[in-house]
Length: 564
Image (cartoon, rainbow, N blue to C red; front, side, top):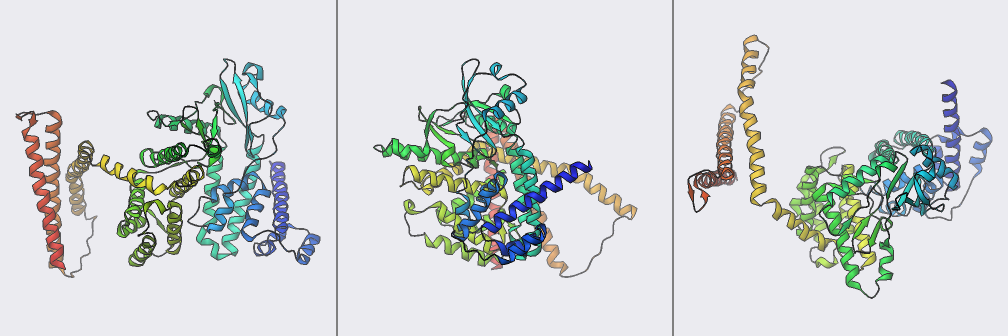
């Protein structure tokens, strides 16, 4: 155990020195001193550090990207994840981080062969009829080889690089230490929550390097698009997959990046594919709540049957129904230029880092944003530009979006960029607006209304059924002397009147809910008597509850107007 600890410390020390040398290479010497990283250097190295006066031939923001590239897979992945964080990083840095690539020198095939045979516990010739020694793609975490199963089916095999997990673990521990130092010695970085970001990174990376998670993601994604004729998801082979190996159907088609050149004479096809891709992302986000978090051009293929095929399901996002609802309100409010709707949704969905923002100031900032494109035709409005300005507002008012939402917004921004690459006239907002309207119409149909009435009725039923028991507990506590009530008279008459009104409305609401539920049950049960096949009692109940509800609404409005 002591030897393992010593080995770990030695590995960390060597890695710290590598990191410091790369920081020196790109002239981040002041950062080394601020974070007191020079303590990891020898006396001679410290003297050299003091003498360095190096001019950099690279741009300021470009240097950050180059540092991450030189540091290797963990830091490249950190940059790729941070490229989603429009809410905490400046746009110049986001632009640089989106350029990060993971193409690396492929491993010798002998290493790949050993990993496959160890993981699947069979010699290679008993698994594949054939496997290409030259990889289709080689990244820092894994590389992909084309192969054929014994039954002749063509597959793509994704194999994890040996010992990559240990390297990532070391880098993540060091990165977390860096984040702690940043928050400790550079107070202004605390607003960006670097420690929290690194913890999220750790969770993301370890999910991604377990290929069973990717396999499950693919199966879930495939089930979601089972009835869709525009999207294709490759089949996966569980029998030939483990935590370090993923075997899936081989997809032959056109990379979306090559589409424009191959269909130069057919702009309609380019427009069609751009719209298909955008609609598929909107469906993933708003219908499924489970979406591809990295739909960059290299991960989208156009197949021979004109279907769109997404690849690389390691980075996926999930959205709670509540977040989806508020997100619809934000996007719908932007498309309809409704300042109040956007502001309300922002305050509901965002996390406040400090004191609550001033509602009127926030609404003013949102109004100014919307006012800038209010007179523009829909074809000239870019969702990317609007969302980036919205992120600026969020940062200004010390708000933070939940991580799942930042991934989702990155997907929207990325897919708009992909659409414009293959069809320059493509506008995401022209797709979003009718899509959201369609969702709203679907949600107000009779079946959905009945479902919502049933859910509300169930909640009221639970409240009514629990009330006697709760009331009995209160009485028992009063009898036993366990409850103490401290009462101070301040405007009791006004309070009493207000309590009466609240009680009246609560009872009225319970009665209204009971009538609605009873009517819904009668309609669904087709209870007699009937008139022209319509259950009269059920319809009568709906009419009565409608009149009662309308009366209550008028009463509330009149009270509000009376106060003004």
